[in-house]
Amino acid sequence: MLRVSLKTLGSDVLSAETEPEWTVVALSLVRFGKADLTAVPELTGRKYDMAIEGGRKILEMDRANGLARWLVTTAYERKGDISKTIDMQEETAVLYGENKEAAAERFTRLRRAYQSLGAQGYWRTNLEQHLSEWKKNPGDPYGHAVLYARVGEKDHVFGWLEKAHQARSQELLFWLRTDPAFDLLRSDPRYADLVHRIGFPQQTQ
Figure 1 (cartoon, rainbow, N blue to C red):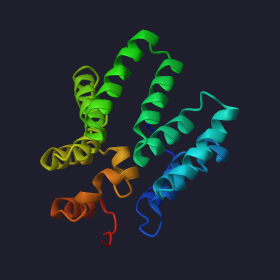
Figure 2 (cartoon, rainbow, N blue to C red; figure 1 turned 60 degrees about the vertical axis):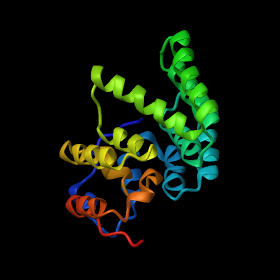
Figure 3 (cartoon, rainbow, N blue to C red; figure 1 turned 90 degrees about the vertical axis):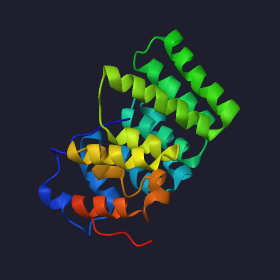
Figure 4 (tube, one colour; figure 1 turned 180 degrees about the vertical axis):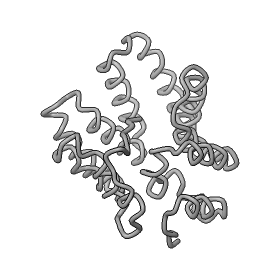
C-alpha cells in the first residue's frame, strides 16, 4: 500500500471538521502533481469506474506512476474485481523490482485461493501473507485491521485499529471513515469511540 507523509499538512487541516476527507488526502499528495490527484475523490466517493479510468489515463503517460497504480488497484479491489486486482498487483510488483518467478508464485497462491473460495479466499490468503511479512518487516498496523475486517474477525479489527491509533497511523487518518471494509462495523460502539478519540466528527448512519 502506498504511504504518504503528513508533514506537508498543517495541523489546521487535520483538525478541520468541515473539510471533506478526500480533500485531506488530496492536500497530502500535492507533490505528485495535480493530474495524479483527480481520481482520489472518486475513490473515496466509491465511484470506482471513474477512479480506474482516471488512474489508467495517468498510467498511459507514466507507466510507473506509483499513486496511479495504487488508485487503480484499490479501485478494482473495492469494486470486487479481484482477478484484475491480482493482475495489477503482480504487474506492479515486477515493475518495481520483485523477481518475476517469485512474484508469479506469490500471486498464483492468491489466484488459487480466489478461484476456490471466492473473495474470502483472497482476503484470507492476503491476511496470511501480510502477517508473515509483518514478522520480518513491521509496517503500519492499519493494513491488518482492513484485512481482519474483510474476513469478519471483529475483535482483531479493533485490536489492530487501536494499535494503528497508538502508532499515529497515517492510513488510519486518511481512510478509516471511507474504507468500505469497515461498513459493517460503523454501528459498533468501539468504532464510535475510536472516531471520537481521533477527533473526527461523528458519522450519521
